[in-house]
Length: 379
Image 1 (tube, rainbow, N blue to C red):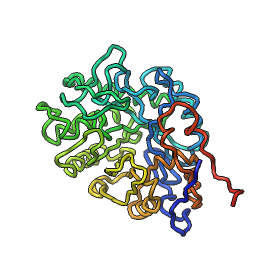
Image 2: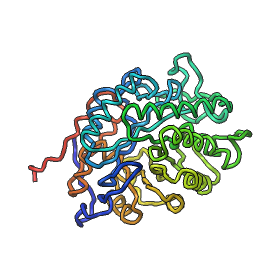
Image 3: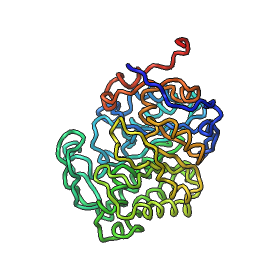
């Protein structure tokens, strides 16, 4: 496995804002380096978290650190990815409890990301060949994750939308039963809630389509339901304004997500945090280096903890600088995959392991549990 040298300022990292404490929900964090939600496909075929996942999160847990799990299906029909985990039955709850136990033993905090993929699912992966669902009868272009063609989704009725809101609520309760400190609602990256928010994928003419208020209604109802069930301080949500991933497109990006941020600030000011992804064209390009900050409009509205995401693994200096400028928590994906001790590497300016993208979506320990911790003795 090759090594790459991190680009970090010569100033002592431990004095930087990214290593200052912050309270998120009920949790007193000791630093602002966040494990981003990362789909890895290491669960069983029944969507039950595996011993591999227990060890994976244990490796990356730090005292006073904050972690967000991979996307986790809220219902048997919420997803179409083999060996992604769920949180809709007792076996899954019990298996997730093994993860939360080892994370808490190391003094870290962990939220479960709640996931429904909507129209990018596949009927052949559903138990009775149920069609994937979405806001409108618009098929995603290109091939799906498994190389097949996307399908025209079943258009959700108002009653069906309310059923899914209840599925989110119950999944949040299940997460708390499993020992999680809270949940993050996945409302980004072209999945179900994001499909409703974006005007390009939502052509409805009822109360869930048309205006910004209508297109954001579903996501905000999910927040209401979950905050009512487990408390706003244990509830968070993730957005990706301006992303084109999975055919997302919106006519009024800043207005749309500013409205979402303002509604959350008004109705749920005690929400744990908002997690925003920086839009970038090089989503899967390893050479892409992010140096932008298009999230300031939403940061000005939301007064609580704010997590910035996207591209920081390839520009650590930008991550450090943004934390200094904004006080944001910074979520890392690829760098955290390859460096289970990422926090200490960043704190000390140690070189980073290079990630191997070919192992991201495999199903065994290789590229998952075998990245080395830093060897202090080699210096």
